[in-house]
Length: 291
Image: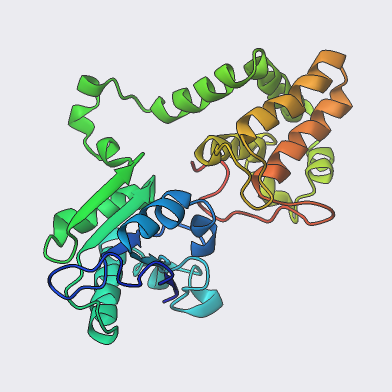
């Protein structure tokens, strides 16, 4: 089980009366390599930890990144994936906290505040709800907890298309005409020969496109609003939703189908953080057409 630990601000400035050197700020790692969430978490790293003298702890979720309990065979079958459940992830984090508190001087009595966004937000909320003795508080941002309450959907205006509606609104308000350009690109991709789409999108294998020609493109479009920060993160530019719209709008204005297809591929490659000759890999069962 891999985790990131940073004690740069855990220098006693946040010392509490119970001999704790400062609070432990835990990010409830999402479904991906943990370093990817570190790079997008300035709120905890640059603001809260220095202000509170906090110890930063970013555990990686089992079955993701390098935390593979069965190595490369971890996702190969039900006999392994049966150990990938939300309740087991929560227990992993609580066990890690207990280990660190038992082995790090000054940490034994420290309060823990959990943070998370999206599925990480759900994990943060569940950590606090299920282990209140271990987790003092939690901040859950953009959690999908409400989706699990099917009986409450109508009261809150939620439908099975609520997520897609939010995504579409992001693109609609980013650049006028962007949704029309997206529709034009999607129609073009569906009408093109599959081999041509695979070539232009530079996929590692045909099934990376998804069942339909346009599934990979749509999958990429749905991912960008979740990473729409006003600053660049790694290979992703600042405000990637706007960047995607601008890429698609130019060839749409020119009426150039070939350029529009290439622009759509550029959007997908941007979403995956790829450049040059690197190919887009198959995303597995949770990839295109399964969002």
